[in-house]
Length: 256
Ligand SMILES: [Fe+2]
Image (cartoon, rainbow, N blue to C red):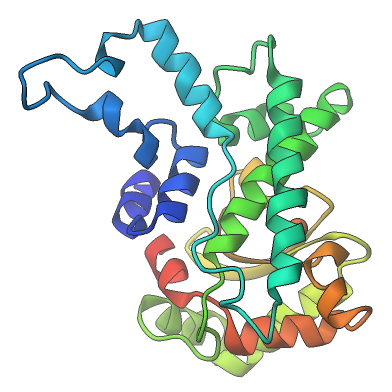
């Protein structure tokens, strides 16, 4: 179900990238694995790989830094290109690189990101793995939650659910902003669906609803690196700008 949703939503490279992160084999770079014989009738080189080699390749793909689904300046003036340069190219990349290093040679190396998070959540001896894999996953998800000329009240399935579960859009927006504002220290504000009902929640540091079996529809990163260059200490202003101008409701709708 989730896999189908993502394949349906996967029009752009970044969504294909996140699909690969969550679902090994779904990313665009796996085209060679899915492809049949070439036009010349030759079996593609990739197809000749052993099953073990393919498994290893999928594991690497599961923790690849996806491209941003928009130009670095596309979210201005609300999120600057400079913020995205550091946030994506430095912070997100570091999580991916660290996760790959920490997983190398472990029994988790062959698992996809979601399985890893569920397996190691709450295990102090695997906190490094959890933190880096979860942050890699969270950031890939976050990029897809943003788009130029987004935000404001949604249309489609999410709008109906918001009205049913929050009463109206204004109450939803206020609750989402409040979750981000009141998250003490670093973390994330989320719109999730739990037992068929939309809820707002927040997590600290790298923690993520996915690790606890809860499906997110949207997130807003409230680590300082997400907004400090543009807003300094004004986290509420950053949250308001994302909610009013950047939320990608198409992505949320694709998750319902
Ligand atoms: Fe971040």
